[in-house]
Length: 114
Image 1 (tube, rainbow, N blue to C red):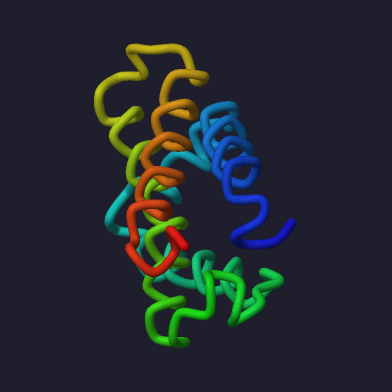
Image 2: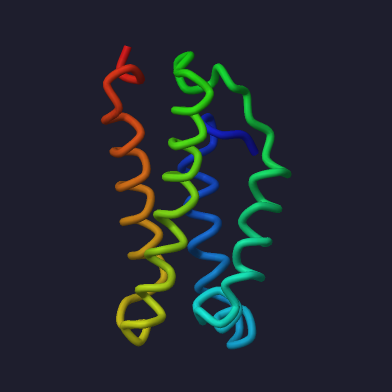
C-alpha cells in the first residue's frame, strides 16, 4: 500500500489489526516503558513504506514528512486511548474515527485541496 493513495485502507487496517491483538502487543504498543521499542517499530514502518515525495500535491519534502507523521500517529494515538479507556466501544468505531480524522486532516492542508 502507498501513502497517500491508500491512507484510508492503511488507517483502518492498522486500527482493526491493533484492536485484535493480544496483551503482549498491547503492552509493547501502549506502555511507556517500551518507548524505545515503539520508536524502532515506527521507524521501521516509515522505512518500509512506499512513499512518493510528490504524492501530497508536490508539497516540500519537509511538509510531506509532517503529513506522513500525522497519518501514522493519529491511528496509534486513538488505539492507545481505546486501550486506556478500557475498550468501551467496538473496534470498528475507533477505526471509523481514525479514518475520518486522518482523511479530514490531510484534506484540510490548503496546498492539498487543489
